[in-house]
Every structure is written in C-alpha cells, then in structure tokens.
Image (cartoon, rainbow, N blue to C red; front, top):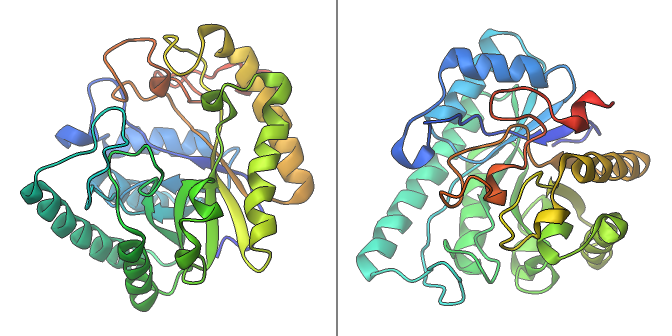
Amino acid sequence: MLEQFGRAICYSGYRKGQDPRTETYPSYEQVKQDLLILANDWDYIRLYDCSTHAKTVLEVIKHEGLALKVLLGADLGAEINNPNCPWGGVYPDHQLAENTSRNQKNIATLIAFANAYPETVQALSIGNEASVDWNDHMVSVDALVAYAKQVKAGAKQPVSFCENYVPWLGKLEPLVEVVDFICIHTYPAWEYKTLRDALAYTQQNYYAVADRYPHKKVVITEAGWTTRSNNRGIERWNASEEIQAEYIRQLLRWTGSEEILTFVFEAFDEPWKGSDDASEPEKHWGLYFEDRTPKLVITQR
C-alpha cells in the first residue's frame, strides 16, 4: 500500500492527435520515452483507467525494468443523472444502463490488471471524481461502496477512491470505512486562490479530511497549477509557469516535511482535454509541454 513515502505524479501520455475518447493511444515507444523521463524524478505514478494505454504503461515498466510503482484506477461513466453539472450531466436511461454495464467491466479489468502486475501495481482506485456535485459522471455512494468491496475481494492491493476533498467531509462517509485509505484532490487555482493563499488553502483542504478521519491514511492524488488559461474558471494572470513552479515548490516542501504522499497533477500537457480553445486550462497542467520539453518547474530546480 504506498506505505513508503516517495515522489509521486499523475501520468497520462496522450499527445497531439491522440485521444482516449477515440481510442487513439500512445505507442509503446512513446510511453517508454515518457517513463524514462519520469523515472529520473518520481517513485510513483497514477494511472486513471485500465485502457490499452494503461496496459502499455504496465508493460513498459515490466519489460524495461523500471522501478516505478503504480496507483491504478478505473474509469467510471455516469450511472445516475446529475443536473448540477454545468456542462451536462443528464442522460437517457439506456445510456445510464450502458454506462453501468461498462463500469462493471472496467472494475473487473482493474482487478485483472492488479493481479497480472502485482509487483508494479501498489494500490487501486475504483474511480475518479464521480461523486462531487459538479461532475458529469455521477455514481451513487452505494455503488461506490459495492465497487470497493468487489475490488477488495478480488485483489490483494489496498483500495481507495480519488475525489475532490469536499465529498469526503460528509457525502462519502459510508465509503470511508470500506476503503483502505482516502484520496483527495485540492486545486486552489480553481477556487480563485492566488499564489499567496494557495499552500495554506491546500493545507486547509488536507487537514479538514485528515482530522475528520484520524484512523485513515490520507493521500493527495491531485494537486497542481495550470500554466495557461482562457479566463474561464481561472483568470489568465493566475496561470503561468512561474506560479506553477512556486506552488509546486511550496507544496512538495510541505508534503515532504510531513511525509504526506502527494501526486502532482500532472506529468505532461494533454491537448485532447477540455474545449477546442488552445488556452483551455485543462490542457496545460503538465510539468512538461506536450512535446516533452520541460517547463520552468523542472528547469529551475
């Protein structure tokens, strides 16, 4: 179970023209290039699904003899409607039924991958941001509890669920006693914080959950800063390489001193994400650009 403190980062290797929605995946050689870059600085990587891409990552780690360890996740689609989602979280009944069936298959694949790569896969997540109020792939807490129990019964690795810190403060209480540890996300930039307030806000988010459940290990599975924005959700002036570099420096200094395992979001920029706007902030959270050249956060170390 990610017992040993280490350096951790979220990884998704989609380059220009590649997109998980169209099942256009990075090649073995592209993933190898990425992981050879990351293996120099990181001990753990987080993967978001059990797609062809994830399998390639696990194969590269195995065949290239890399020391990287993996927090492996399942990708969940909406099982219930969420009219609170600003960009659309309401689906016809047949779509919800299809999503539920697909989710069950993804959970089964998560278990299969965990058992096939036991030396590399150190922990498992049953999903990502599927219970927070604004998401477009809502899954009920009861279903999450059932998925967690299923994975715990089928694999030896410890199990969690990766979610924004807010649902853990109430909504997800039934899940807390089922999972082996808690995974939270914290994004000061999305909550209109400046660099001056960012670390204190991250600490507030973390301790709100950790203090509520002192008997559970809390891991930060997403924390980072975008380097570009189109002024939607994050103001342009609050997104830059300089701000990212300083926030990550402060974040890792604090989490290192407290030995709080923290997955920085994320390794590389991903052009497929968000809207078609080139300045869409979702595309620019990487510590490296899409062409794999490093940003200031890496070069100024």
